[in-house]
Image (cartoon, rainbow, N blue to C red; front, side):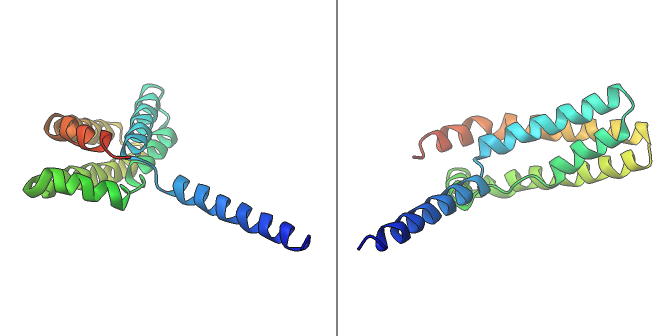
Length: 143
């Protein structure tokens, strides 16, 4: 019987670790947005000091952001209904612009970085103006 306790403890530990890993693998939309803000700051900092590697790193962070978790995506889709394609379009626009920024940064084309960065920020602001309040309200109700 004492042999089972260590195995039982190990099983519980493995289960707990897998739960932690699964939770860490699916950040909330708020956490994703905070990471995107950090990426924007990195792009800005890179522009201010002519560090195109930093600009490219920030742009790559935007392009590769974590997806919205399935449960949160369902909540958002239910709340936005027929407006969900417009919500997705903003994400696709920001994604495409982040790739353009990364490409321009690798070419050290400051003007192209700035033009695409402005467009990306405009897209972020437009999305927030259209959806932030409703999406935040819906997600604040989730357990």
